[in-house]
Amino acid sequence: TIKRKTAPEIRARKGGDPVVMLTSYHAHTAALVDRYCDVILVGDSLGNVMHGFETTVPVTLDMMILQGRAVMRGSKEAMVVVDMPFGSYEASKEQAFHSAVRIMKESLCGGVKLEGGVKMAETIRFLTERGVPVMGHIGLTPQSINTLGSFRAQGREESDWAPIEADARAVAEAGAFSVVIEAVAEPLAAKITKDIAIPTIGIGASAACDGQVLVLEDMLGLSPWAPKFVKRFGDLGPGIEAAIRDYASEVRSRAFPGPQHVYGMKAKS
Ligand code: KIV
Ligand code: NA
Image 1 (cartoon, rainbow, N blue to C red):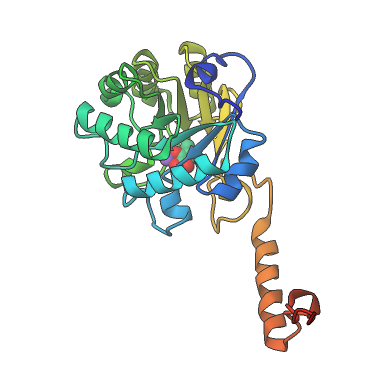
Image 2: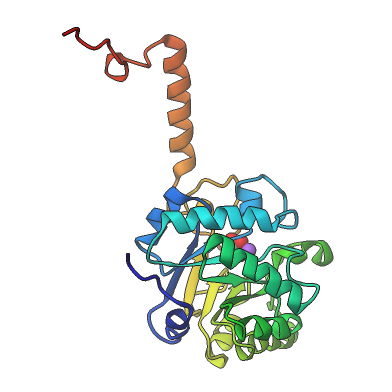
């Protein structure tokens, strides 16, 4: 079997070839993403995409582990990173370690991602020193929606920069192997990328970052709505709808199944 990409290999990409990352939550899309991407993120966006929740807050550790296992089975070369869901790591560094170990043992993934900068730095250090590769996530942090009130781009005024820069530095100095920067104004993303020693992976944070990530269903055109920063590389929604419409119509008209889809009797010997 082919050895997967590792956290140190991703870390070493700082300033080199862009780190290419997409989400996947299931085996068959993981196999496709695996052919072209360095990192597959089993994001807690699965709460929205798979389960129809309005936010990622209801997502559980068991949901993440189940989908992480599916993605590991479907892929073989990419590093698989699983999101730590809301409530599974914030209470203490010990809680975070316990949850991360469950994720790694039960899904066999190569690392975890968690949201938060300065306030999570001690936890990131605790995990990385104990064998858990951690990807940070700063800027817009969707798990905090209920205290933030709304999802807005960050750092669009220079007076807002200092805490976001501090978050980036804290995550990097705590030992994270890379950091997702979500919905951050381009000049700030560029400054952070220049200032910290680990790869920045942007989502709505410009091409200045060391890598990029998108939610697979968003870039495929399968999500009914997607943020401004999403480029639709595909338009699968209408194609899937047309196939379902044709199937329904052929079942109703009895055009499907045809002779080629039917089992006849075996010839008698
Ligand atoms: O959950 C997710 O898909 C993510 C990416 C958007 C970075 O965290
Ligand atoms: Na996420």
